[in-house]
Image (cartoon, rainbow, N blue to C red; front, side, top):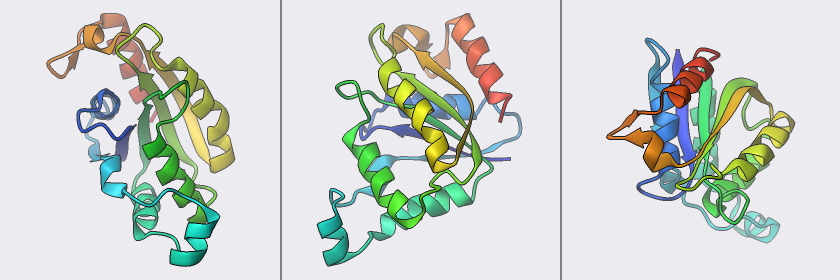
Length: 171
């Protein structure tokens, strides 16, 4: 099984990318590819930009990465209660190529933050909108207090580890 994992964040030290990668690697015998949204740097989406320069090749690369996989694990950073600008921009450009961005792939949606909210607001938005873009959501989880839950690359909270293992088993 090929799994695509990414954190919907532009942080080079993204805790969401770490959580997505960790969860994807819980799937036995999976080949995991971890995307960094920084590799998909594009101009801010607008119809005017699209008319003048076309759709950037990075948007097609994002669609192609999804097409080459069997399942997806995405973890969302929350910026002011919503998606990060980096994710929203990649998503907006990709949706100009293919409205069914997630191509009916099974997808586990996660979110985390250093604080007690666990980025639950953005996770709810992602869960609620995913079906419009052919994301087959098989489960979701908000993980609060990331730095207390994950240490040295391992989830130390047993209930969170069990929940993530259960979600990985649905892929």
